[in-house]
Image 1 (cartoon, rainbow, N blue to C red):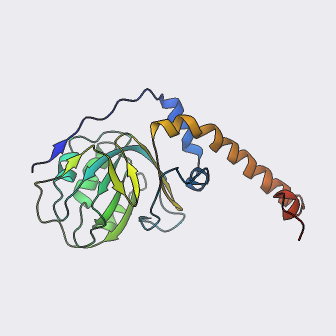
Image 2: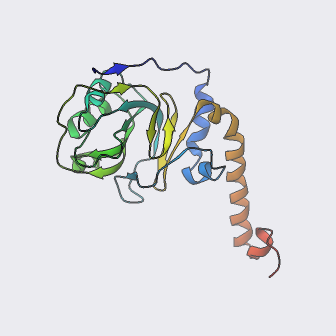
Image 3: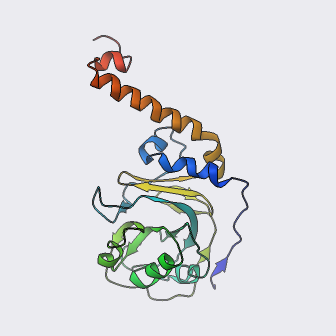
Length: 220
């Protein structure tokens, strides 16, 4: 079956609503509840902690029938500024779905990163890009075998989480989370309140208060 390109669902979210999430760490987002769509922590940042560019952008999904990477190739003409290429390769570790050439092309088009539930290659080059964030399950030198099948911009499963086209991907040294438009709008106030609360906890501990008092623990 040839590569199928699906239309992206329209959303009435404003850019201002989306941008409020830029200040929210992944740990704060996923602490809001088990339904916040955390992606398997085995899909890791390519760079060591402290060196990985933060990931923040809209998902363009590519469903692969690895080792075929047809959807990744076709996504080159679909992806645009602010997008994140999300490659669903079912954890396939034997064949890389993307590397320096295609990764460099979407970077030049303004994409801000990629997430691969599978394997990538040319990691020395990908890791040198300070404006492009890469998360992957595996690394391998072997390339794909064909480019004939797949789907673009359909809901996919990435590391146990369902990611739909247009979802917001946030990634940092701790991991990844995918936020639906409904979650973006409904939970931002909770996330911001959590940041305020954590700052209060830290200030109280620095001031010498006991952990029992700060966290409201019962006396032993």
